[in-house]
Image 1 (tube, rainbow, N blue to C red):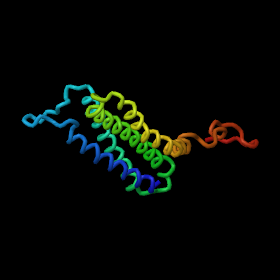
Image 2 (cartoon, helix red, strand yellow):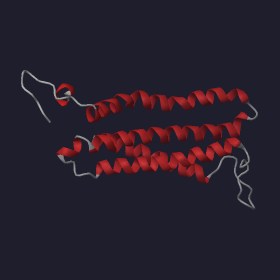
Image 3 (cartoon, helix red, strand yellow):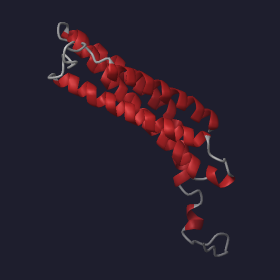
Image 4 (spheres, rainbow, N blue to C red):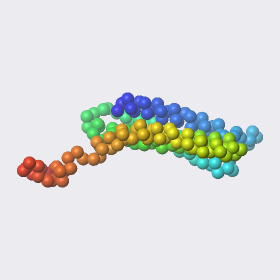
Length: 171
């Protein structure tokens, strides 16, 4: 769990850095006298700005969750509920930030290249889905196992007060 949190915190920090830089250097540049972005009235620019902001805020939140895992006291009872819950939240927020980052980068490519070449929109969208698909395919088994071990009771029959080998079990 600690190694996973370390790796994911590095990824979240890289995403935070990248989308912060993308926020400062807006696609297409800006008017020099007023510093207003050139594409500010375009709907694609609005999508870029919103998705970039979402990615920045969510990746920062993801980074904080992973850092909370790394700085926890690692008590025995924390491994039952607290740490798996934090790891699930961290992985899900990392997925959202990756998705928002890919939307922001795709809209940037659209703004810069697809107006003259509309055929480029298909490959851009296809390639933008690849990192998201890879993350989901590679991390879904971990998220499913964490969810199952944390939230799904192991012994359903015992928990429902049914008899077990002739003995009554009560909780």
